[in-house]
Structure formats: C-alpha cells, structure tokens
Image 1 (cartoon, protein in one colour):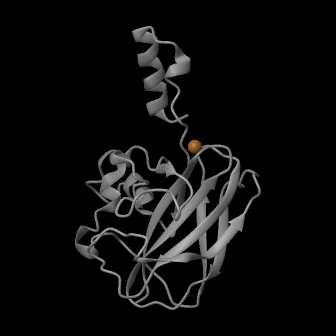
Image 2 (cartoon, protein in one colour):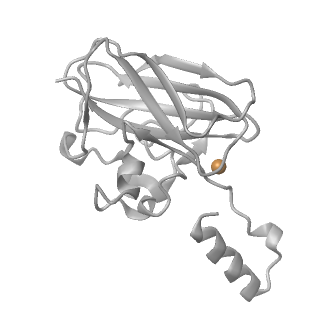
Image 3 (cartoon, rainbow, N blue to C red):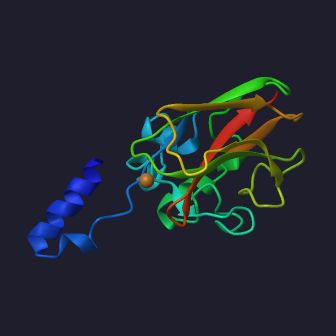
Length: 197
Ligand SMILES: [Cu+2]
C-alpha cells in the first residue's frame, strides 16, 4: 500500500469520516525500461516533477484513447493536473531519452504496485517532423499502435514485458504506452522519451 494511502486513511479516522468515502483509486504501475517520465521522476533522476515524484505509479486518466481519453496537450499527464509537469517538454530535449534504432526489437517492461483486470497494452510513437518543444497531441502521434497486447480481462504478470519492432524514425520521439484497464473507466498513460539518433 502506498504510504500516501495510509496517511489518507489515518486522516480520515482522525476526522471521523467514514472510510468508504476516502479510499482512493488505487494506483498502480509504470514502465521501467525504457524508463517513463514518471518513473524517472519517482527515481529522483529527473527533478522538478511536482507531485508525481511521490506517485510515479499513479498516472491514470480516462480510457478510450484516441477516440476519448486525455485531451491533446495533456496526454502524458493523463489529463490530471497533479501530473501536469509530465507534459512539459522542457525545451524539447530536457528529458533523458533512451537511445534506440529503427527496426530494432524493443522490449518494454512494466512493474505494477497493484494489479488490474486488463483489456490491453498499446504502444504509440510520435511522427517524424513533430514539434518536440510542444506537448504531444493526437496530430503528432501515429494513432495506429506499433505494439498491442490484448489480455481479455486477465491481470498482467508482474513484471510484464512486451516487445515489437520499432518503426522507422529519426531523432527524438515520445513512445506513449497505454495500459487499458478492463473493470474501470480508466487507463494508465506513460510517456517514454526515445532517441533514434
Ligand atoms: Cu491501480
């Protein structure tokens, strides 16, 4: 159980509130390799992340991307204002990027702090020519995922690794990993900076 939850429960007891009203949506996973922005913040490898430093596994927002889901410009933060620093492009090159090669078989690892019944994991890439200084939008992403793993409601193993061939790209890109939860209205969004050189 994340420490913040214990504190919230303790505060609720102190305030005499019914516990049922205070149990938060349990959060719950991140991509560790290549590392996502939230994971780097949680590891202390990137500074000035705001609250996500303490909740790197909680970047959760409405599911249904791209038809629904977080609004353009708020995708890395899952449209949750608490995680807004994740959409700050930091000048275009301010986030550490993992070096990759077009066509390589890329493995993406997830670690979970709470498992969930899962519809799918999907992986998207920005398109060549995107403006790296601006937060990503549907227009800047190739909306056809280059890897899809369908779980049909099962819980993922922990850790989980997915792999697939990286499409042709040049320079810096964002790999958007989406974990679609089956039994809630939410999905987890992870932005991963990669550099094709
Ligand atoms: Cu969760």
